[in-house]
Amino acid sequence: MILVDQQRVSRALYDSLTPYEQGYTSYFQSYWPKSEIPKVCHYPQDSEAAAQWRAGSKAAMIAVMDSEE
Image (cartoon, rainbow, N blue to C red; front, side):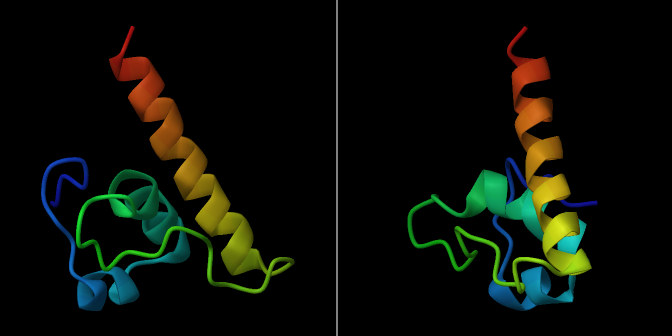
């Protein structure tokens, strides 16, 4: 298990993840220095993959908010 808030994910590993996992990972790592992880969803906006990507990103945001309480 990779702790995406602590361990850097390579682009190759990112590409092997599900859209949900990609969204979750992007939320945490896209703004890290020298990150290979995209900042925005790369799937067609109206696709199921894009919906899953956004759901993963939202879940990561909630996880951060829950950890700050």
